[in-house]
Image (cartoon, rainbow, N blue to C red):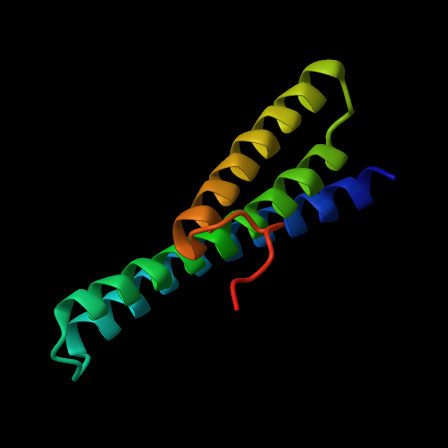
Length: 114
C-alpha cells in the first residue's frame, strides 16, 4: 500500500506542475496575441487579453484543485489536513467564481441574455 501512496504522490505532483504550466503558457499565449494582433482597436484587444488571461487562470486553478485533492488522499487524513484542503478548495473556488463573473459579467447559474 505504501508504494501506491508514493505513485499517487508523483501523479499529484505532476498534475500540480501541469496546472502551473497551463497558467504560464496561457499567459504567454495571451500576451503574444495581444502584442502581435493585427487588430487596430486596442480597447477590443485589451478586452481579449483580459478574457484570455482569465480563462487560462481558471483552467489552471481547476487543475490545481484536482492536484490538491490527490495530494490529500496520499497523506494520512487527519482533521487538520482535511481542514487545510477545505480552505484551499474554498479559496480557489471563490477565485474561480469571481474570475467567471469578471469574464462573463454574470454568475454561471444565470441564464444567458438573448
